[in-house]
Length: 253
Image 1: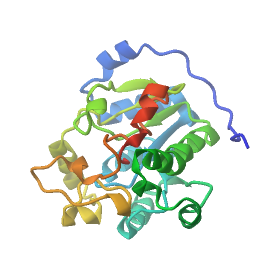
Image 2: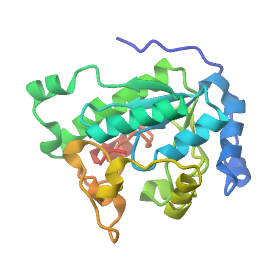
Image 3: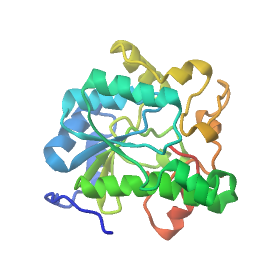
């Protein structure tokens, strides 16, 4: 059944190179303010309620509080993640929109087994079913023309090449904290009295599904704690071309 798509005004074509010159290195609030003014009700933000998600959610709650916050629930998140999501949702008064696969996690396992244990093809199917499809449905149903994401250049090789504003699958992607370092993130959390995910204290620095996330040591890349596949992008932040869809063989956000 096709998605029910909300109607939104389509923004005019944007000069991404000019926007890169304008917004590289500027305050994150300035970019979010521009996005809210440019895209209006077509603007959304995504969150995984991961280790440091409070940063982007706090920024959006201050600058553009009516922005829909898309949370993709795989059904396999840590109990601490669900409680952390409730804490931030209550504290920041988020306009939270939770999306999940049409088929429950229990039913998927009964019919298909534990897909994440069935090699690269199984992992790709798992991620497509539980992450990519719910996100694409959310963007469609909410009529999104632009998407705020709290990804940073230091997280993966793909993200290192991104600009503050990009295009992905017919929508604009805006990255307000793209150039932030780990120190920048921690300083912002401390300055505003914001919590990190409770599992950070146990050594989890990149947090996804309970069956495929492990703690890491300080000398490791945080995303070495994400065990799905050979790459580190789950597909939510990649264009869905045939070539880049191959990167669905990866860990989650």
